[in-house]
Image (cartoon, rainbow, N blue to C red; front, side, top):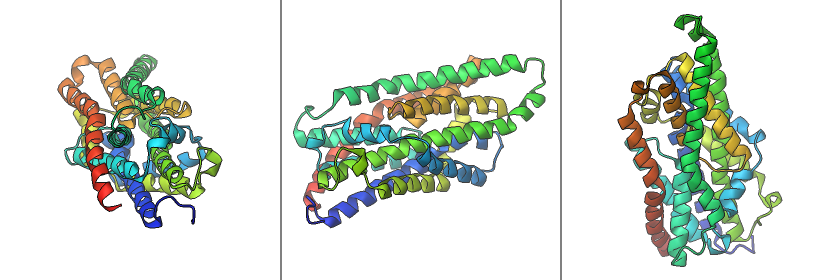
Length: 337
């Protein structure tokens, strides 16, 4: 460790803060994957969080580290990043997550982290020169695209299922999908673990690069980073965030076994495609879009549009709000790290 560019204690502290963010990500966003199966009664809350946590961790062996690479070197220029920037980014994202969790708002942990990283880097550089617009612009674009993709896939699945079971009673259709929604929720939890854990892997990777103990070559990334990040998000999901389950499971539109399955699968397909493409999208946005799409396919009036509008406002505020908080914590970090 003689070639460390920061103290070992600062490095340990920042890794701990990163894992705390990862844990909070699971605690905050884990509700997205289990809200439908809890709302429809397929599993009890305790069973649901254990189910989701298991698939969060299994994602470790399914997806490559493409999202981690985008966060680590595709959002801001690593040359401008130091441990003060990492501290500011993580604290900005953590603070915003805690605020939105307290008020039961399903905002995006992903975009809170991106906003924090950009905000802390910009305040350090005194301008927007460090922003990698190709990567950051893609993230901004998918704030719009990911819920729309979820909306259309969820809606089309609902229409297809309604047609396929047109001669069946609601009870008969529901019995078919009681276990189908478990498959859909499992697939979504897999995507949640694969996409979101990698964001924290990317941040720790960036930290190790700035500390001089890793490079931008993925082969130099220590495996303890990968295992600890997947473990932290799974543990956070297991402990769960029930304020947000209530919003996602019933306040947007009423779900049953059939519509819950279509919503979960719509979100899972959207999230899986993004993860395979290395795009750090919001799990919150994809599942919300899918739930609204399913509700709209059944009856436009069944969707609580006022609640949906409030969620969209929170999404728009996430990156600038976490960025401003991160900028403040950058100054704090300069004082004691």
